[in-house]
Picture 1 (tube, rainbow, N blue to C red):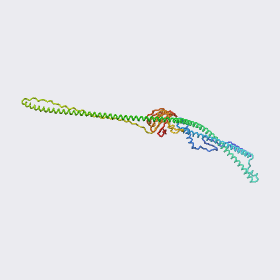
Picture 2: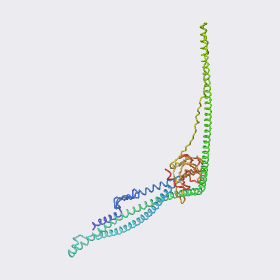
Picture 3: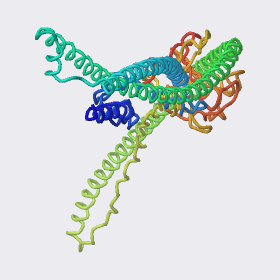
Picture 4: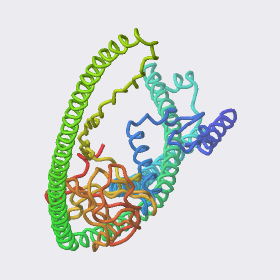
Length: 518
């Protein structure tokens, strides 16, 4: 009996030591990324979070929200503001969903902690009960030690009774072994429950921290959403006020355009009348010039005829004079011949006499030189004066519109919060040059209500308007070529900032300028 007592004490000590020891070391979520690693003991299998296809979508949404938060609301276009508002609304909704999910996860984790703690307490109660039973069995074995098989046979009435006693003792030993196994199993379950409780607490702490971060993100997203919505509201107020001002100025502008068109038609009528009068005067002057030239030509021709007559008379007189001279010459020749004949006769007489007397030297007759006839006057031929002609040519510009200014389109043609924005707004610094979109005539140039300092060009089939200018480079009535400088970007009239308000009008009705532009 003394030899069994240390064995029982050792068994009890081993059981108590097993109850107070730990089955292994556990490192819960060492990286903080949702991965649980358990070593040297029972627990969850090592794992890693699965790749979620929503991660990329979440990253894209966050990037859009970040870009929206960095948006400069003063320079952003309406489309950019609307896109930023949508992105921030999606971000706020996502953050709200994330906070709600995190809160639900915290609640679930807290429930897991409570369940794990309850299971741990129940396991510990079972361990205490099993420990008490084992201690009782050990003490009982110590007090009443088991007898040997020979002793059982000796004290039994027969062998059958001895075998029955031995089977009963074996059953008791088997029950003791099962009790120890159950105790060890419960002990292992306690370790598992303790690990599960630690994991649940860690997860709950992480969920609570994540919820706090998401609340901070939500608050930031709400602030950015409020900022962008306030900017949109301000822009809506400004644009609505500008559109209302332009609408209020539309009647005045239409009247001014109609008056300018009437004045232009009157100027054109006057110009046509003046041109027709100038043409009539030119034709009359040309007719007078032709008549004068004809008279002068007739006078020259009459003078030529008179001169020819005089020349003919002179020639006739010269011919008569020549005939007289010829007749005189013939008469003189006859006289000379008669004289010569008489001389011959006288000479014969003298010769006859001379034969009787010495001969005397012959008499000398002076030679008579013939007078040349008077010359006729020279003929004169007058060439007609040449006629002068004159002509003029005009060039016209053709083609579609060009961009009237370099800048950023901040507002398109179309409805804005229930009102028509009748043109395109091109944002640019004050002083940026403005060019004529097409060749035409300056119909209006000056202050036009909400349009501020503005120009209206007439292109025949359409009109273009350039509003909010800082100063003008052309005046009403001037003709401009396509691409010619007509003014500079400004902020006059009812304007939301420095920009050019550009319109295209057909029959007085604004249309979208986009089809006319490159």
